[in-house]
Amino acid sequence: MDFGLDEELTLVRDMARSFADTELMPRATKHDRQGTLDREVFALMKDLGLWGLTIPEEYGGAGLGNQALAVVLEEINRACASTGVTLSVHNSLIGAPLRKFGTEAQKREWLPKLATGEVIGAYCLTEPNAGSDAASLRTTARLDGDHFVVDGTKVWVTNGGWAGVFLAYVRTEPGTSRAKGVSALLIPANLPGIRVGKPEKKCGIRGSSTTEVEFSGVRVPKANLLGTLHDGFKIAMDTLDGGRIGIASQAVGIGRACLEAAVKYSKEREQFGKPIGEFQAIQWKLADMATRIDASRLLVQKAAWMRDRGERCSQQAAEAKLFASQTANFCADECLQIHGGAGYTDHFHVERLFRDARITEIYEGATDIQRIVIARAVTA
Image: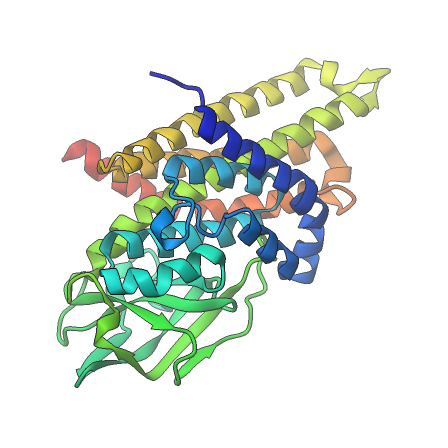
């Protein structure tokens, strides 16, 4: 087994690292405080081909896989988690299912626009009464001639305020419950009857766009059905495997940022006549952080490798998401503790990392849901 990156992935990693260091790190605090990303970042990601990282070359993308996306997301989230989640959702929750389940006509219409960032994608699954229990969604889509008429509300929609297309999961078979009778629809954001709510004021990842999206009598062409009618919940669950790898990669990036900040501060801060990094108590914290980060990365790379090979990886994606997200929060807590009172202020970016880390245990399936997925797999 080769644990190293090949030449292509090394070049991709170095490109992402340079972009993160030169463009994102200087902007990350600004993104957090202003509650949105600088639009220049969108253009820069287009120039680097990041919007279309996993989209096939024939549709204008880079044609890379989940391992490449994981490597890129780790580097970007190390600098700015708000940018990282924006890119992760676009690639793993919109581009991936369209690539896998879309018709050729759907691919020709949407993938080239997604590849350049001309259109940003948003994923609409969660509802006010359907969070971890996603199968209880109530948004409906009834057939009316050649169109579906969509009614309902989605919440916590990442990229909602920037979206050019929504991938929405709706109930298309009346009288059904749970996962039965759910379909996936590609809904252009400019259709009449769509209302995008105000950006949510969040604890962390404040620069990303998170909104409510309301559909009221929205007429969507039948040709926009993704996959098979009434079989959309399987698409949603398959898609979340990739999304969880993306968020696990984000968690690794945040954890790395915490470790790097902690190491730097431990060399600079002196107490009792020497740098605090020379005290065993601090050294053990750094050792635990480094070990958990390395273990998280290996779990992420295994899941991404399996997904690139077309193997089912629900258990592995859940394991990566579970462990990496807990690691990010562990590292953020230890990093802040090493910084002491200074870390609790906004004089350092540690407090932002602390806030950004928390969401990784919640979205794309909460920690408890990952444990359920893993337990079902090992007891099957």
